[in-house]
Image 1: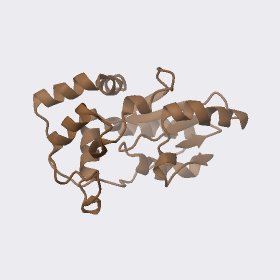
Image 2 (image 1 turned 30 degrees about the horizontal axis):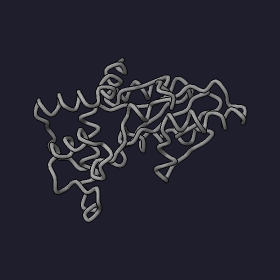
Image 3 (image 1 turned 45 degrees about the vertical axis):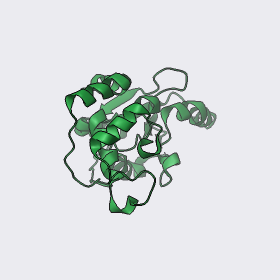
Length: 198
């Protein structure tokens, strides 16, 4: 999470959406930077609204707008799958190198809290903790230049993104019936991504 006090912006870093590259490009312009530890770097919207927003308000930072990136759900799941298939993850309880992408997505549809696919949910991440939506500006990962332009305009500077924390390449496809099942079990993820188009 990055807080830009002067610009009244808070960047909520949803994992596997280019957050490491964005953090690297934006950190020097931020008033507050939460990084390194995943539970600090990736503070979800519902936790921000419950704890961080009141705290920042007491520090004089009010009327803050939130910004977040969402990736197409299939691509987002694919990034997690590839990340956990790395040799460094062999032996861990969430290693995915010995299952197919289809099995991974099927497990996520069955119960996203299973260890093998416990990766959170973008719709829940962007919630306000009160059954509402908690993000003011949502950008598609696939339209990253628009997010960069947004930050350049708000920060009054030019930015350059460098690829970081890239998962290994591998072919990832889903049969139509499994894709429909994913859409049926997690419609909010697809809805947010659709609505984020610019």
